Amino acid sequence: MSEAATPARVPRQLDVAIVGAGWSGMYMLYKCRQLGLSAKVFEKGPSVGGTWYWNRYPGLHCDVESVQYSFSFDKSLEQEWNWSERYASQPEILRYANHVADRFDLRKDIIFNSLVSAARYDDATEQWTLTTDSDGSVQARFVVMATGCLTIPKDVNLPGMDDFKGEVYYTSRWPHTMPDFAGKRVGIIGTGSSGIQTIPIVAEQSGHLHIFQRTPSYSLPAHNRKLEPEFTESVKANYDELRETARHHLVGIPGETYAASVFDVDEATRERIFGECYDSGRPFALMVSFGDLLTSEAANKTAQDYLARRIRERVKDPALAEQLIPTDQFVGTRRLCIDTGYYETFNRPNVTLQNLARNPIDAVTADGIRLKDGTDVALDCLIFATGYDAMTGALLSMDIQGEGDVQLRERWAAGPRTMMGLMVEGFPNMFTVTGPGSPSVLSNMLVSIEQHVDWISDCLAYLQAQHKRKIQPTPEAQEHWVNHVNELANATLFPRGNTWYMGANVPGKPRVFMPYLGVGPYRALCDDIAKSDYRGFVTE
Image (cartoon, rainbow, N blue to C red; front, side):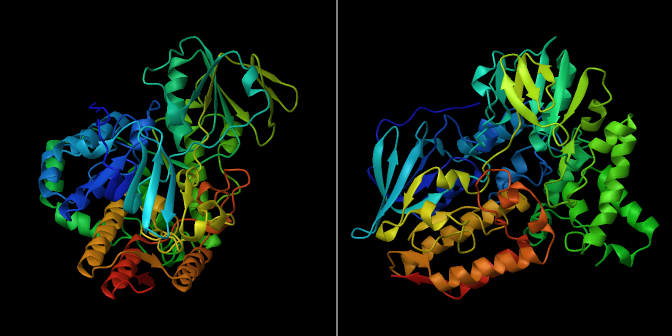
């Protein structure tokens, strides 16, 4: 992995300041260069890669197939990079991120180890001032928040946490060197995507693993495999068609919708379709397999019943299997996971499920965890796989102040409000990549990131050509967009899910459905707004 030292001198005045050196920050820098704009990226870590740098827990793989989870903006890049696995692992994805940074000589304009703590807009100068912990302040005409959707780990506040004498790890900040769990009593809290990928590996290594589950997840077997050269060559030969299909699909990943309703086909056909998605390890394909799976409670129940049967097949103890089956959630409204041997892990003699829905945690003790019924679970190590303050966490962790000294935290006190997830009224010239109100986490992130960065760069080019100084959405247009996002969501089962899409995993966070449903329709709306001279925006 390549890393770079902070350049000795940072310009105090920029056209564009970019916060974050993940996929969106790197691509935004590339586009700014094409426009002839002076730009720097400010990255709090020592490397590019964003979430794929910070996350390195055992078993971490992407849940979008690697040939689709990659940049499409450069044809040579597409052809020269070869993925080794169907679902790429974190080390391989990070190598790809570093390859992109080196391939386009991006590091010279990235300020590493530079945390942006504040961004404030000056009404008089029409400039943004960014405050960093390494280089003081920097002024820029435009700011692009490329801060990511899964950046700020959720706070864990259990009574007695400071009393625990053993080792403590977080999947969101895993050490670079793998801990030695051999012979140790390990507890892991959380059975979302991070937990599901980590658990099988830790179970193999530890003396005994206690899995603390509050809410079970649905997971499909990943069926990960090495990619054959013939397959890779075929994908590369058809990349243009594959990419274009993805850009206009519901989730940014090509997949077939077989019928408008699960009830348009007979039970045998429905079971076969579910089985094809399940047995091929394609969670997004399952979500869109029928047109009403995410809108009809009755339709969704057919998928719930199917997945419950598959869980029972994989777990030998019938009573244990029932505890691993979600009973109060719809399929797809909580992120569908992929796994390698997750359910089979519960067949191991050194694995115990601690069902927190039945017996919650009372406190962390010096020697482990005490449950409500007084049971003490002795532990040498404790792993928190407890997720993120998603979508808004990174933005609200900064002191962002717009025109008239308005604070973003105040504006979003009742939940995020944006125009297309790209801008916020009252914060001129500040763009947000894959912000709330856009498809983002309900899509192939690379497809959504490229679309957002392209839209932003086209907007900057438009402002240059029109000799305009600034742009922001009108209050009316933003209100219309927020209402549109809510109307779409309310026509589905998503708002009824107790999930991080709703902010439900963070105590005190407003319950608002944050993503936009539909990559293809969203892209068409964004394109239409841009083509109509940025209808809904005011420029000066």
